[in-house]
Image (cartoon, rainbow, N blue to C red; front, top):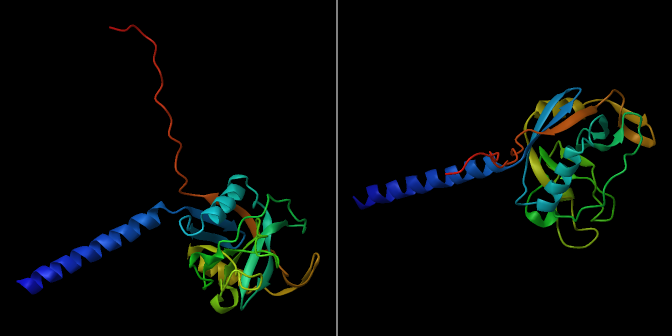
Length: 211
């Protein structure tokens, strides 16, 4: 009897844990990255990277990413985009966001992270999707300029075949860049927050006689 009761308790705890994971995932923002090669669905992690997710979604709400491009493609590294128009004009951005790369998330294949300059806290709008496991190169090591790492804030849940199509586009010189620019178009047609909560509205006030 003791073994049976213990097994039942263990089974119940597994069900509770699975439900908690499912509920947590259901609450996370999901965005659809529409490209000229197909759609990429990404789950974002506001609990792990609250400032980064809020920053990214603010650009989504502004339609900032519409008709931008993946301007940097490295087939054994990542695809980067969201900062230049189809004519290689750099889009003006909001102030940089604090680097949250010490959140425990890793630059593994399919993860999405913020691109930046050598300044750890310089990320604005550009992002990249890892096409291989880049944890050793890009993850947070320490809070120094060289060790800060690159902040992961979500993962691709559907559409890695589209990511792989883009990563395999031949590259070369393009716009202001001397290498890694796709020779055929890789356009971000738009990014949509597909499970955005609907605003709560107050019921209408109806005027009339009172008792």
